Image (cartoon, rainbow, N blue to C red; front, side, top):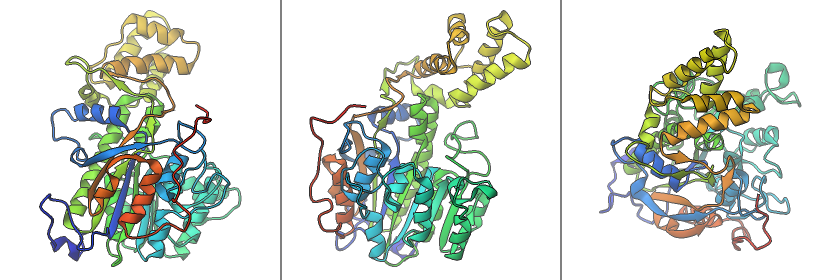
Amino acid sequence: MANEESMAGTNGSGETAAADGVAKNVIFMLPDGFSTAQADAYRYFKAGSEAPVWEDHLTGMVKTSSSDNLVTDSAASATAYATGEKTYNGAIAVDPDGRALDSVLDIASDAGKATGIVSTAAITDASPAAFGASTVDRGNQDDIAAQYTSNGDLDVILGGGRAQFLPEDDGGAREDGIDLVDQAGRQGFDTVTTADELEAATGDRLLGLFTDADMSAPIGNGAPGERPDGEPTLAEMTEATLDRLSQDGDGFFAVIEEEGTDTWGHANDAATVMNSAQSFDDAWSLALDFAERNPGTLIVSVADHETGGMTTLFSDEANPEVFQTYRATYEDMLTEAFRRVDVDGHTPGDAGSFAVVRDTIGGYTGGAVTLDDETIASIFEAPDEETAYATLAEVLNAAGGVNYSTTGHSAVDVPIYAYGTGAEHFEGLLDNTDVGIQLAAAMGLDLPEGQGDTMTTGSDDMLLA
């Protein structure tokens, strides 16, 4: 729902412009775990349709190290983006000594702007948490949830992670017995739990908790990037967020994260990473449309790190377009194959079991992958489920010209994209702390004195994970 600003014009480049060069609205978008290899693969996954919406807005690259490691985690990297300060892996908006830091979302709220956080992860997970809470350990998710509903800064909170908001007696995970959903209601939040409820909600403040933990994988649910019935898409959550926050005359600051690009990178599941990228692309398109209609809006998009050490070797016979035919995560494919072997009364390794596994995987890949006997034998003979999974994943990825070198994070730089008022702040090779500093500068705001003044880009005594 655009406000009256949508009637204003644009500058010659097609980008929205504010008279004073200061961004009134900031949409910070984070495709977790997504770097250049994933972006290349996604371009081919699109299969000849229009290019990914962000490609025209590449402005630079970002170095991702934390204060204690060349390979960052999401907590430390998101803290750099949120506060302009380096910290240790696992820390949420605190410095290396554990002192709480103010985030750009905090200072935006103090300036009178509306604020919101959106994620397809548990909303208390590391990346959104760095903008809306402070704690010495990212695992303190009950505390993070309590900070969200008590600090008064947040107007919109949408994602998974319902368990952290409810006491154990009500099916949640909170051992303190506090019902944060009830508490949020008393503070003026409308609470929703389904896509239909989100669409129908009318309140100014919104708490949407759609799953107990992370939201479901965006694959096999209709079009690429869609989640199961009952769960909203990232684009739908983005639209609901922008509709609400844009009603504030002072502007807004919003954080929008797609978690699946990281979760399924850890699983070396390239097909589901691509479907998650489609989810993010859909949200980016919606944000770009908003920015084009609302001068004074800035979009900044950057991953916290790369996940999986993805490499690509595409050919006409093996490129990511094939992932369009996949209809389940690799984990679900393998689970279902073993289930069918058992239900059909076969012994793993007999002739009948080979046919069941081959037919199951073939069905879930739209006939694109036919496992040979050697591969199926390796799956059956694997010493554990993890090894069996890795064997299947390697074959499924190879069909798309993709390979992985790790199930963890890597230290490669990640691309940054920016569009709109203040996009020039994000050009060139940046440290992740630069992003936080420049987010504040783009809004014409200052981080607290002493915060973001010194950029620590790492040292020789860092330990590699």
